[in-house]
Length: 496
Image (cartoon, rainbow, N blue to C red; front, side, top):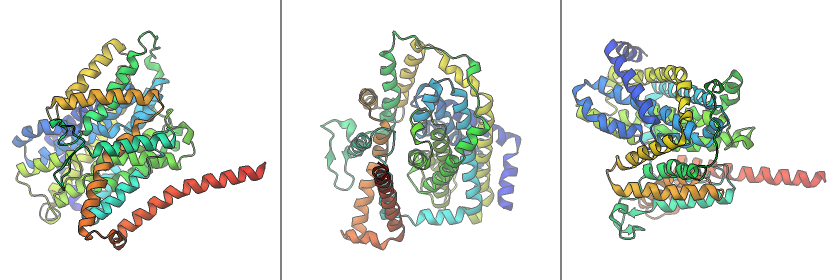
């Protein structure tokens, strides 16, 4: 605890606090831009941090990382276009709320839930970082496979569409994850001779197409419709009753997000998707999801920000990136001459806790900015479509092109824009497709690695207690709804 207080004291210096403030403001801004993300911005600004000292450099990048997740929810709520991939789930209920004049309420809940999730994860790290890092390090390919199967088992319930349609969309996502070169055999699959597909389908252009371009096409079909623009007085922050209703969702998101964030390579997007399903599963108001449920905003936003803190554990303690953005932060550490690993806890504890202190400060700063500027952000909804959506398309093209600087990613974005538009017209949800794409490659690679470890023995999974536990939880959560459905059907027949 003394080391943590020393780290907080280091943050309170004027220069470092100013750097965290600038990083937070920049993170909210770039997070709100459709197609761009915190990882892209961190990569672009990484050379700038070479001139800073190690604590300042990592505090700056960490502040961008924390704030970008919240910033992504702004456009996800206001124009159904997630600025950051981790905010993709927020659009499911945030945009319907904005459409009925509750943009300020949704943005306020997003800011509060994000802050609670972020602070929760930082406090957990302060108290139990060594324990969590050892637990994450104990995860091998069998455990990752079991966790990915757990995620895929939710496909039938994610998105609010019919179970069969959700399953079809999820399977399409898994199939898309198989595009590209198989790293085990070196064989190219489903590339159709196109060099741009050799490395697989990038996640950013797919997500940008499914949301931004699909919404642009949808808006183009409504050019003759007169859209009622709500005055600023219609936007309001969530009430105490909203916080009470969403309290359980925030708790679930904070715990699940921190746990998933600690596991290397999963990240905030996976945490948000899994949390959305679990919040919906345990909600008393399932019928509201997909139509503007406040719980559908609170849970995922708490999860994606708590995953930020969790993902820093394997990055700093083990040198294993917990996400794409922490991989950039890891590169920044190496450039600064800081060697991440367990020795940080014994040799440089004040540096480590200064990083956590900067994350805590970033969460508090973007809470103030988010609440204070909520109505200002809601003004985006007052921009005429003739100006707004061409600008969204422009930003989306830049966002799709920037990460790999490849025109193939732009064409991918446009193709999936059409796919997203057709999905909407035929009652499919994009959420299962996104989830299948995120988890598909993890399922395949972890299964191959596991079978190599077990010498092609499938029963080897039964020798891993954590994997067995995850499989058991998957089966229970998959079977219980069927049992409850059968029980309700029996009671209905008995009542006749």
